[in-house]
Image (tube, rainbow, N blue to C red):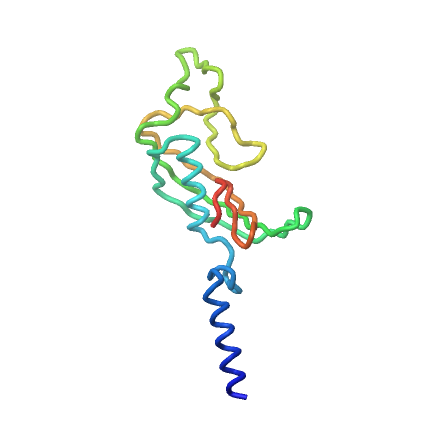
Length: 155
């Protein structure tokens, strides 16, 4: 009987060593606030400026989503953030004296990284040194045992 237990434990140990740790996640496996911050940071640096710095990032609420129609789970975070743009962003989009902007630029001063219908697709000008407050959200979708952020990365 003891030999059977030892053999079973040895088989389990060999299997456990060959499988990544995340595959065994049973508790607290969902994306964390630091993952939401990283997604936001990646989107800010990609959409606005790589030298932007996040001065504050606070998750205000979050919850799991059951995306039954899509056949997978999701997770959503709402947050506020303060971002400083030392060099500004999209300087080529600075409005002229009359307030007009070039083609491909937006005159909107509503800044967001939320991936949804409201998102402003055109480039937005941010003056150098400006600090912008964001009230945003981000979502993760379960994909292959990991969580895919809206920046396209797996967490």
